[in-house]
Length: 283
Image (cartoon, rainbow, N blue to C red; front, side, top):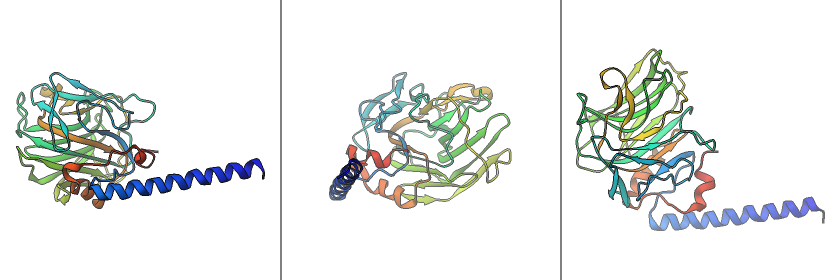
């Protein structure tokens, strides 16, 4: 038997073992009720006592007095709405957090208020990569705006070219909600609350069109604030008051079924067995 034949047989054996092992893990996942993490994940921050990325690529850090309390799935980030935040630096050569052709962000939130305490606007930033002091400093922004879920993707700040969607109904305060925002490229957006797609009002500026792309920059991803607004709110702002749990970012548009599965898993959450990593991580 030649060396190539031996190598081929060994590779096939390894593949079969992997598939059998994965199938066993899927069976266990189904029996305990955890949601199998969808593919295309670029970051997963569980908020369980640290700001680390489950994928070990984009670990974050706490800002000000951000801390952890009991959350929806184990622990959650606890932010005071004054100056607390979580920051993830986008400089790891193993992967980036913007410049995608599609995007999904999903997270469990427990807002304590609709109002940013130190500013005139009723804005609570949930997840943002947004700094308007830079020409290409904004990539995306997921907020509660006057209590409604708002999600926008930016091609550029100067000139201003962006599009988004704002839910027609408000998110309840002092209550857990699972929210997901999907960008399918161009001006195609979807919003989900507690596993159900909700209606919304389209938003845009600068005639983005169906060929709109997402900006790439070195602005950190923030949970609970934006890096900088323009005008009178220049500098860190839109601080979120409440709990944030299980933040995920994907470089593709998740399907309605995938989002529903994450919500349906409830407090059990997503499966954390590392056998899933080869399948869920961004290629």
